[in-house]
Image (cartoon, rainbow, N blue to C red; front, side):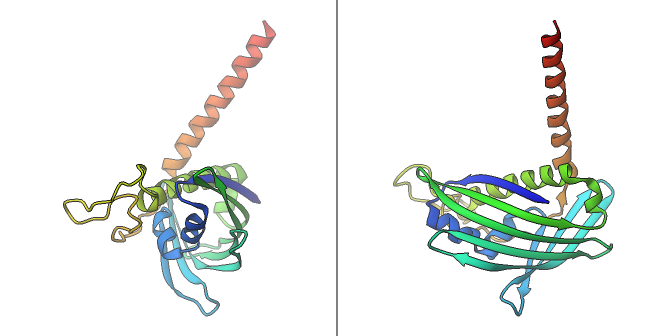
Length: 209
């Protein structure tokens, strides 16, 4: 299946592009993701944990940058993982393009995803909606950690505990990765679909009058 996402970062395009290629910085911003050691092909091992109600999915695999065009700010990432306690597999080829949008950066990702096992049985709609919400959380975390100061000339200052503030460009100490609790993503998604269904029915009733 093909999944398209688009989001904005409060960084110049070149800075946003470099940031998104830095797995050391991006992975801690993904819910439930942990970055492992380097692989022989220049990639990195990665583990992703997802909790869906009583079910727990743990995927172990690798991710690498297969293509990189710095002039066009375009890159292709390839990932493959196996469910550690199941028969499921996940493969993805993600094409990322960064373009200027005023003083900000617009990021377009197009992912060609192949799932097998229990996750595949949830259906395309669930997978796509959860993917979009995951990207939203990642974007918010990237903004909090690395986005430029909002006021021109503002000099970032450390907090009382010595932590770097948002916009300083310095990442806070890495915390232990927490599992992605997919239920917290799916419930809002279900509510969104209920609202769409209600709106459609109301529109039909109004047209029938």
